[in-house]
Length: 359
View 1 (cartoon, rainbow, N blue to C red):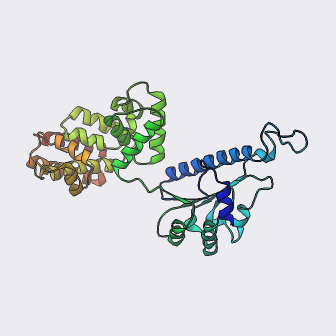
View 2: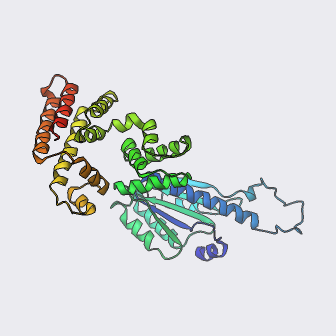
View 3: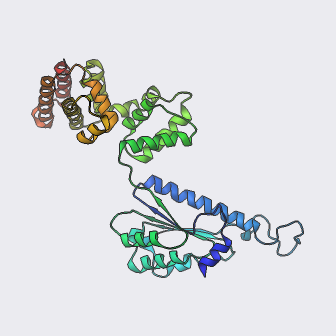
């Protein structure tokens, strides 16, 4: 019955009656929820304006509701956590509004729903109420998996939006490209990678950084523009220290090191970055020269762009120098963990010795 009524009143621009957003990437989940709510309210508002006798022959007077009357206002948005829902409450939330019009019900973290509530959500999805848009978010893991599976298999108008955690560097690059495209801007590859090096892997911070750069930077968005805004943060990762050291750029490496220490980066993270950089030198350097970057990346556990960078950094390095540099890092790590009076001095000495190992 509900499904038949919904089909009769559906508009081509309206969201599906039931929408499932699955995944752990919170920013993408929030954006999907907001987009669906906006689309639902717009469709319901248009439907409200089109319903009834709205032509020029409509009689004015009693019963003629103005543009601000309750009848012209789309239904409420109910946003609840699945863990807080009691059995039978979903029926109340999806019942018709007092003033007519549709509504939106958002159920968050459906994996936390009790068995009775989960069964109720599944039954509702098979026969949704007319003019109501249901949005269900689910973490997508093992917890509450039966509910997610049931919703995905529900016959009828159910939309599934996947928002998996973005873990791969290439996927984050794609996300940054998309953010600039949404803002009507373009950044070159150097700028994209510099931004990720500076901001890290948190998608909310990445999105905020893209928004700031898109609004504040005029013209070309490249590595230099990113450095102007995020210089301290980019240097604080420790990986820039490593890159400059293995490239033999002593003055730059020391400058980056001092920046990192000044911004509060623990010395142990810097030695870790140095160790990773030098280990990659050894692993990439030992690989056959003609080996494809993608294949080698899978073998050494680094993205292809990083493999290409390490191949450039290998110029001037001999196997003996790489082995000696690894020994230097091991000594520095032991020193900053208690054997040295000044961790800062131990790190600076290690950077100087690493640069000396090159060539």
